[in-house]
Length: 396
Image (cartoon, rainbow, N blue to C red; front, side, top):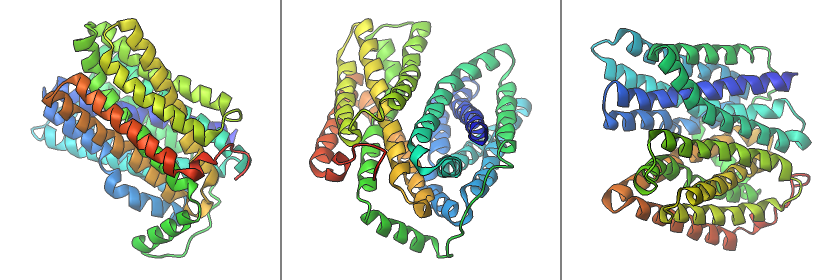
């Protein structure tokens, strides 16, 4: 029952979190009529983990995941309240307040995402942690897919301010559900942040599979940013889809990520995990290049479903592997590194793909990212012997 309450809290926070992310972009485009502002707001929602992620990881290990989670979730509430103020009152400093609110949302993500992953170990024994992490990751994907649908429905039926009100309500319920959550935490000795991270990296030298899983995450997240930035242009320019068809085409991405999460749950005991991650990364790289090449709608949809389903499986296996191998004492810091990778790498790859699309062509941008992804995967396959030796979750 406690695990179910934790999952429910996570699900509410994921949906609300992605709703405010999408609000930052869509409100900037619709009301402020500024693609530049939308880009800055998007950057503020995803950029803070570059700085705050390092603090978050040390604090989770130092003070406990539950404490950090409950305090940090208030940043989401404050950011959403700022957005609500702009949407309802429309003050003269709207743009400044809106960007500050987006920045607060970003701080929330920097602390809350790794804290939730680290907290999962409080609810399940070690032998069930991989399965629970894959379930947790599936909830993230469902939240990612559901958020824009829910946002659009609320915004069209009511007003923008009602989107913010709904998000605030979901964040507050999410926090209330965790008030009585377990908090079995052994306080670490107090060092400065630099020393605590030095100790973390020293520990990782003795568990080489963790850095190799993190490298696999960097390669995998190279795919996510370009998909979000370039796919709408592919749908419009290359496939000739109208607005409704474009929405359905993009919706395949969220559907396929969820499908990949479900497949990971079913196949986790039947596949050699490390080798499967490498093979699936190669196919993901190839699928990106093919999407840039294909002009037939049905074939593009098929390749998109296959590529993003594999991406969903890769992410699920990587985060479950990290949970499986990471000692409790450094779990917060390792999960913070993963959070930084998931947000920063995808955002940087999206910016690179966007620049290439504008400077050369949309297809060319996908070819470049595809070649980069495949090359790095081949390099990891050659060098990553510990990753290749990772067969199952049942034994270290």
